[in-house]
Length: 150
Image (cartoon, rainbow, N blue to C red):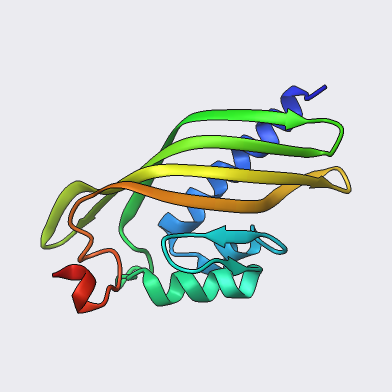
């Protein structure tokens, strides 16, 4: 039976991801996927170094070292499978951004589909699938090829 500690541990992983990205700590975000897979709109990547490289190549950081974003994660639903020491979670996200010439606004929203594993008594990401459902002006947030921007 899942405990409050299990629920807190998985919820904290979901929150920690958002905190790391908003802080511009892509190495820290990558570390959350030590043996895990991150599946975005592009190809999937596996492991800390690959996830860190992906964020570094994709997300624009400003002079303060951050992407000037705020990830709001909501509607978190977690289901545990005690027999396999795994859990799945569903959640929504909205990313807000503000920079000097770009007033505060939502720039992207979607949902996460996560899978977690418990190893040696600790929960960790096994897989995160990101599905973008709504987009705003991403020109200050992501490095995108011209064909995608136009």
